[in-house]
Length: 438
Image 1: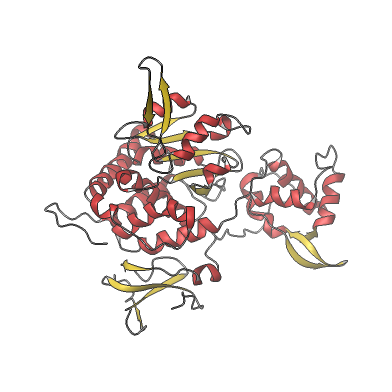
Image 2: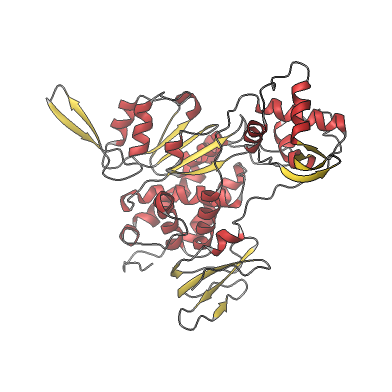
């Protein structure tokens, strides 16, 4: 990205993003590296709203309480541009707050109480949908002035809640699935009077950096690893990453592919933890390392005061998928069948069930591995442009730059930043050359 010549001192955008990333990581544990990178870039993008055609939403969702979603929203409030945070507001009040030359960043906590049922707060949902794109104003008739008023809806917005947000909002959003912090995971307590000023100071530096580069961001056309509405949503984040340089261009694109490719499931939240506890009880009683789905359902229905009489394989899978517990095909004494393994539940039991369960003591720890782009997804990453990157930018991935002439790969020196290269940025998974085609 070519920057206009100015007399102001150069600001190291990559260092700013790194410091914001470290600050967030100090107080809250996100489910993956990609989620953390996405939140950092979204916060930065709030300062360059005048440069964007679309204002991406950020949805912070969790399957249960105490997953850190409100704490993450606190950090976003401290770091983002002109925050306006609420747990409930009338659509008229939000319209008036947003319809200014310098709209705030709208932050909504507990969206599950606002959009509890289909049809609840449709005006606010419509505002959030329309405000994703420029030139989608609301028109209201002013009875006193006897004329129509055109009210802008364009603004950045982040939301936190339990379960899925309305699907029309999530379709326009970067979605982060929070998880409850396990006992082995430690964070620093957030004290707003003590800690907010330091995070807000990083936000002030982001403002100085990005407002000084608005002209460059307005004309930026980053090559996108995703398409259609996902590209509209992620373009501001990737433009900020390209402007920052360092390893952020590859981080941003990896996050876009990973989070966009994650399947969104709208399973109901009721009784989820009860289901986890009951499954833990059944595995403890049987002593099995794996159970066929049919047998697990039979045992669930047979529990005393069981609420699972109508549970079927599809519904069971939908409920468990929010906790990243998925069935697998295995061979049982009765033959090969779909089923669930004990190890696939271990992380969810650790995070959401009380530690005095029947089989938690002595249970080996099975680490959670954040999702990485599949080999096919990485092969489809085929972008060009002026990108600076480092070899150790993403765990499990290395990078090289093609000079764009003879197709020769030029590996990046370990620990050094490459010069700007006009050509192809190639992602290579460890042990697997996975590149776009010429």
